[in-house]
Image 1 (spheres, rainbow, N blue to C red):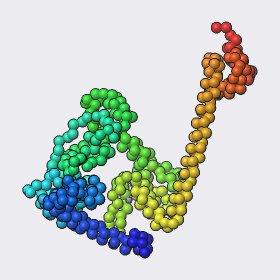
Image 2 (cartoon, helix red, strand yellow):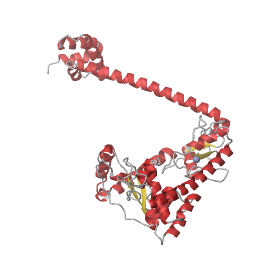
Image 3 (cartoon, protein in one colour):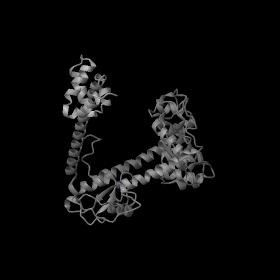
Length: 428
Ligand SMILES: [Zn+2]
């Protein structure tokens, strides 16, 4: 049997084995860091013909540059504060949390800080560190940067991690990443790269705000813009409104239709995050892309009422459908929906291309009749007449302008053109 083919395992066995492997991985990581720290301390990479520990990890141990960087930093920190090894083995800390803690660990702070950091997510740990070690606000500035491969971008630097150099060159990604970093209680540094259109909008917003925002403060402009955008999204996604209308008494013909008042009530009742709770009592933490899910499916008589609706993330919405109708059936449905969507997309692409060809041909015909068109415009011809005239002119490309104009006016019809010919014959 293939060692990596696990399709024969029962769900509970698979989950149990996975948990055991993760636990084993933590123990291995702690032991690996201890070994790295000791090899580093004894400088055993030198006799192996490597100039530094990082080069040895990449060249000899086949680690990626980033993995080597993180592990060496964590190993050195753990060697200085050995309680970290046990915390890593237990899962109380992970590699990233050790790197976050590293700049703040001293003989005086280590015990308390390691205890406070235990079992926190990295985001929570960043908030804790911002609270205990507040940093001043960043100065606001907008800076034009070079294209991606023209050198390291200021935004790509990780102040917390990349200050120490392990090798001759910085081990860091050239890809600038957007980031939100807690600085101090209730203060966050936001950093990202905008394209030209985004920058243009920023400048325009600053100009439109004028004195409403002191000196066009970028942070304040974004705060105002985001407040409006959140309001817009809430209106769109949750039917939020300042002036709610009562629910209509008429029942909608589509049983899936959810009245705006019901949608608002469900959003207010369930809030964020997703309402799915596991058998062990763990509530899903997903806050993005929440959907209204019918507790009793519509196909089984469920109604779009507040009582029968709940907020679920998309995967848990699908999971509920899998449980209700069977995964095979739902997979077939989704596959069919994807096929139909792809077909509709292809048809739209064909229609778009045909329209584009028509527009190009019409533009070409109009260009070829450029001697006649201005005169027809003066006579008051509409755009349909102009296109028709251009097609007529294409049939007599060698005729003089007078001949072509005469031909066009005649063909456009005496009845329809009586007004035009009258205008054409009138003296100025
Ligand atoms: Zn969920």
